[in-house]
Length: 100
Image 1 (cartoon, rainbow, N blue to C red):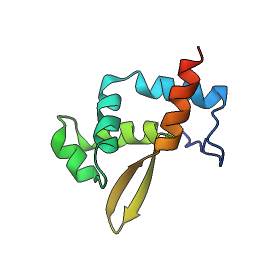
Image 2: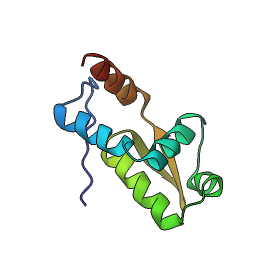
Image 3: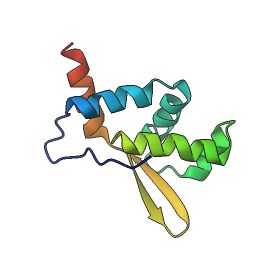
């Protein structure tokens, strides 16, 4: 799967990104992971792995899906991956969802 970058300066969501976010959030584990990331200022993949009962490979897959949807970005500090919640994208998603 290729990583798609949906971010733009205005944070307005295209239909494509809206569907990608909805698809990413349809998995309950993925939503739980996103909730953990959003609830902490600095969250590491190690903390996510320790807090869940899934393998490192499965966590990596879920993070890739959340990143592809634009809900998180993943920074690097040495060998550590540091996911960051994209709050503006989330707000845009909720606004578009409320328009339904």
